[in-house]
Length: 97
Image (spheres, rainbow, N blue to C red):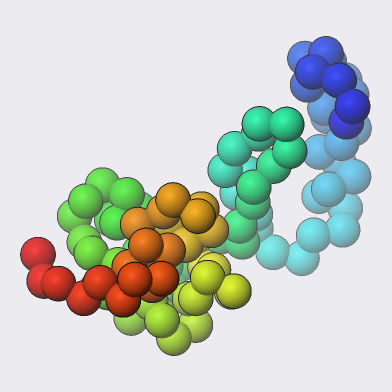
């Protein structure tokens, strides 16, 4: 997509969506669209919902630092450079709370 007006064209967007769906093999969540897109594969092992609601800390997740790392994120808080999991991973914050 080159122009913002393309996002507002429902027929064009349905075409893009159909093209995407035709070749993906797993469920995807589009997390933001702002000039480009950030996406992540939906993974039920990720506790991102609880982390985003501040109900759990990143290090409480069984996948944190194991299968979920900044170079291979499982959820939004590790995808974003400003995400809670990224910050904990990058700075090795392991405080309880």
